[in-house]
Length: 377
View 1 (cartoon, one colour):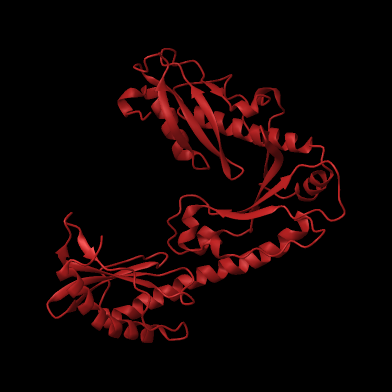
View 2 (cartoon, helix red, strand yellow):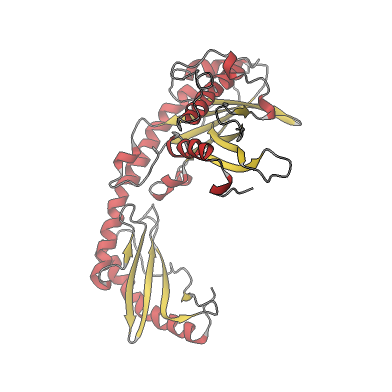
């Protein structure tokens, strides 16, 4: 249930706002509700989705609107009934006094509490995985524990077989600093998700684990991990042997992707020669550009959608009429066009000139389609 600001007590709103603004990962509030049975009172409890091991864990945070000075309760998921964070040895960087000296007037206290609990959860899951009776897992863990930032998760239940997931951060490079005028709020990371089925016997040549590269959606503006083909997992290989080759290969891919931003920028600049200055352009990643064009008295916009793999992959083009509108009063647009003369070996200026020549005829076809109402929206 959505909650407007007027439904949330100010002291809870201040705590929650500070948490969402300053937590080192992107948190999500799934729902908020009231403590009374009719859900008509102040919204003093909410479900929090917290990133962990390339997934989310869901915790309910329960305040009492009538007792602002009381610390909140936190209810963990049903699969974590053995998680007792205050009975564990705290991690070195955590503040385990977040409840004992609770001060509702300090808006940073909820942030401190959730951060402490998540740090404890990392230790809890690591302990669970370490107790699994699986020779291969014990060996894999012993070889990679020295790497910073690894998260583990043990999952089981119902008819599903037990398995252990690892989230392994890759590449010791600051991708944010590599992109000029970077708009990203959070540090962009690439992870390898490794999933091992849980067994009890060690075999001389165990099968490869399930492997998948994962990154934040924002990174796809510059580098798409979907375009990366993972190196093969050789027979008898362990994760500690696999990671160096993967990181070397991936590092080269990232450097190439960053360098291609300037290649796309030069292409957009070349388009200005036949089309004039762009009406709009993506100044950071150079993935989009829009130009105003005319064919006689017919004026239209030319939208360029430029892939990260440019010039290996050609841009898609869409035309948009400035004079024709559909029944919803939206401007008429063409299909995505990619069947125009193109070679990745051409210089940017030649690419631009050949596209401009092609659009001379294409604009007439598009105008006719707009006039006859053949353009579908």
